[in-house]
Length: 127
Image (cartoon, rainbow, N blue to C red):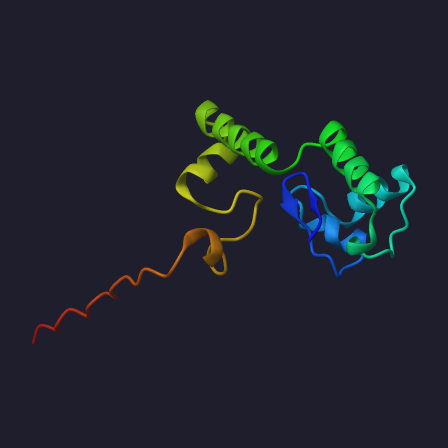
């Protein structure tokens, strides 16, 4: 398996797809990187030469925020929102959807497993 930017990328996939295994690199960015370096998108990752691998690693490290640095940056951004007390920060803090989705139904990913609340008991009628 070739190793780029500290990540083992799958050898039997095209380079365009294999680069997406790096956190912070998607299909579009992968295509732009390969185009900038003049590497064919359809070539398999195992067929890359050592100089191509080193060029890919150097280009990605120099021009893009990836992996640990990107995760750290996202965490800092969210903690800033929480600390200043803005609406988005409050939604992050209480674990509700941040981008305006409905919460009456659906939102299970953010809210977690259902917590059942007991129904009201009907008071016995006085006779």
